[in-house]
Length: 331
Ligand SMILES: Nc1nc2c(c(=O)[nH]1)N[C@H]1C(S)=C(S)[C@@H](COP(=O)(O)O)O[C@H]1N2
Ligand SMILES: [Mo]
Image (cartoon, rainbow, N blue to C red; front, side, top):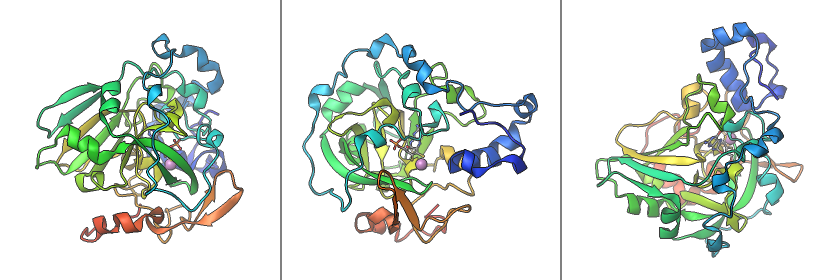
C-alpha cells in the first residue's frame, strides 16, 4: 500500500503502522510540503512488493557462502517460557522501512544483494578497517539463542537466532578507552531499496548503544535464524538483536560499526524524538504517547500477553541503568 501524504486530520491510524503514523505526523508533514502539494508520496514505490523479485542481483543468486556453518549449537542459557513463533510468521511479517512501510516487505527485500558485503569498523578504534562479512562471520563464536522480540508497536514473537555476542565483535574491533558509544549504520542503496528513494528520511537507518550495553551478555549480532543463514527481510547478512529493548533498536543490514564518545541520534529519534528515544528499554508501565505498552499481541497465537519490564530480561540488564539519571530510559 502506498502511504499517502494526507492532511493531518485525514490520517487514520488503522491504515498505517504506528511508527509510520508518527513519521507522517511529526516529520513528513513539516518538511514535505512540496511533495504533499503534488499529491502522493510513496514510502515504497516498489509496492506491490512481489513484482520486484526479478531484480535480485546475480551476485547472490547462489547459495549463501556461510550456509555450511548452520545449524549452530544452541546456548541453553538463553531459553524462554513461550512457544517459538512459526518461522513463516517471523520471515514474512517484518519491519524494514528501507523496503516499505507495510509488514509485507519480504519480496521487495529480495532485491538486496548480500555479497560482496563489507563491514566498516570506524572511529575510536586501534585501527580503522573493513572486513568482508564472510571473514568476520567465520572468525566469530557462533551459537543459537532463543529470544523474545518486542516491537514498540505492541506485538511480539519468540525466535531462535544464530549469531555471536556483540562483546566478541568489540574484542575484534578493539575500541580505544575513549569510546563510550557504538553506532551502527545500515546499507544505503536507493537503487534497490524503494524507501530510500524518499530522501527526506534520515537514511541510512542508524542505531546506537553504549559500550557498556554492547558488552552486556544479551547483546547479540545475528547472522542466522531457525538454523539457517538469516533471510534478507530479517536483516541479512548482519543485524543486531537487543531483546530487552524495543525492536527498532535492533538494526538490520549493518554495514558500518562506529565507535565514538558522542551519543548518536537514531533513525526514529530523528523523526519523532518525543515518541522514540535513545534508550528504548521495554517497560509496561510507561505508555507510548499514543498507546499503552502494558500488553502485547503474541504473533501467531491470537492472544495478548502482559509485557514485562526489560521484556523479561531485567536480571541481566537492570544494573546497566542503576546509575543513569535520565527520565527517558523507557521510550
Ligand atoms: N535497517 C533497519 N533495521 C530495522 C528496521 C528498519 O526499518 N530498518 N526496523 C526495526 C523494527 S521497528 C523492528 S520491530 C525490527 C523487526 O525485525 P524483524 O522484521 O526481523 O522481526 O527490526 C528493526 N530493525
Ligand atoms: Mo518495531
